[in-house]
Image (cartoon, rainbow, N blue to C red; front, top):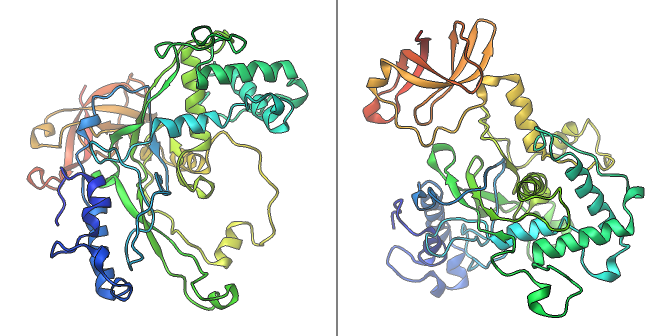
Length: 440
């Protein structure tokens, strides 16, 4: 089956994926047949069809959004615990979570709620003096004390001193936890109508849906695990053999998700207004990430679309390369402080700081470049330097242009430019403007 952008990806991944070209189920193959090279080639073709196809995400374009986040390298894993294999060579080994109706990847609201809930203290009374709860509360207090900072989402903040986190403070945050995640209005009340908020008064955590496709208008891609230990071999024996890659599906980097919450002002802390809750939730998601394998970098987000003009780093490194990256030796490094930003965010910021022209605005919703734009086109100012203005032209998938000249406009404002040099052709869909001049 050749896929098109209207296909239900979830149905194809779990149903049609296991049907061969003769419309026969691969489930009926013997174990030996599943291990044949011909079966591997069949699945490689199916994997390529899935990962190199653009899917229509317009269904979600008008959905409500509280804020947008973009996946960072290496990507996002959702639903990896679901079963998805028949022990065949070349098949995707891990499951994936799709919206049932559209077949597109979504992040369930329950998963988002669970990540946020993990940061708050446990509401069980016997855990009151638990040191983990004390650390959680200290971090939340540290964030809330700095939440009015304009750069709140970009900076790292130290937790409050543990000596200042009293039992009363922990009790207060336990009640806040009950209020946000359990809908409890008064834990001491006995009647349900007095104890719980109505569904209309509670904080609601909606699914996060696709807002923007990634590079080349793609959403999902292929990745692989490479375990060394093989069946019927000891660990020592396996070390003498090459690893066997196990392919799996992931959401690609630079894919935008729209997160939506319906939250209310807290009745327990006047500082925790609905706007402050949104900022706090966004900070937690940017710090912890979401989904599977976050401990090795998956599931991390940025709140700005950052384009890095370099090839993605390889998934695996040799031991020598790894030691070199760690500073030339294999000694275990001391644990680092709990950072509010992922290392992928920090790396992207470093690259962007080195070359501001690599930071781009999201141009997904702009029209395709056409010849009429050679007369005049709007552009957003990305940076103003001495005698040079870096702009982002308003056409789809545009690249920033450096223009010699001066302007009274500031970063973020829109100006008119006239393209003076181009490449590609509009009819082929690859027209780009390379140079331009200011229109006074």
